[in-house]
Image (cartoon, rainbow, N blue to C red):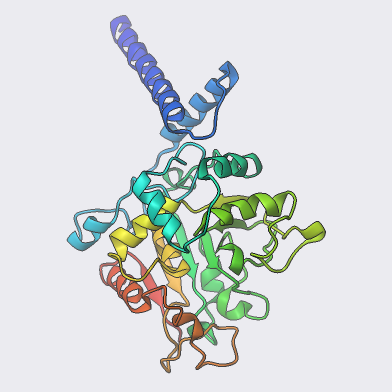
Length: 341
């Protein structure tokens, strides 16, 4: 019995030491933002890693997105190791990813990305879990709410609100449309030009398509010097940002473009970025407000001109290919799509 206890103690000691050294190495080798290691910080980091290890729970949903060997098409595209959110620990971009990202909106003379990220993580959390603590939840159900006119008179509101996470995007309003689109929002994906004021309990996920988008977050939370990217402006020239700001990882944008869109379009739309993001942080994903309405019209649910369809004709996204991707995911029971009633 004594021998067994000694062996158990040795194993536990080795495990703790391994986790600590791994954490230290990863932070030291991959963190772009300089980090000073003090004993207290070491203990906190080790404690967090142990908590995550202990809290890890397998998926208990009826259909688990991450389950493999059910579809070769899915297995070729889905890479669970790619992290959706930018953190101080994973901020180092590979050269090809950085060059690709710079070409998205052809920014002229961008500032140094390393310096920009250092400034960024002085005003937003740099230590968030890039998977939003997914491993600690047995079955996380998520609703991704698009902006299609097929939401009108759908009465999906209560159904949408029943999900653990509700993700919306760009300028989508809920006021006045609660019966169809719901009232709950946990995460809202935007880029500066599509920013809108968000509720206090909503996490804003910035989708950066250029370096100045990251600078805008710093500006918006401090001096307000970059004001031409977002409307409306808040007090003292600053926009109203939600208390928690998360950053969509540029490498994840490239992953969506390469793996899921196979290079179609110039870069992915916010809609498909929201879908693939959700597949990495959720166990079940339901889509609402994607595609045309019952008459074949493409428009936003808050527009009075059903035949507008302007958002589908941007020239930078391949809407048809993106729609085929979501349709295929639904056909293999990885997501569900609700197209109105």
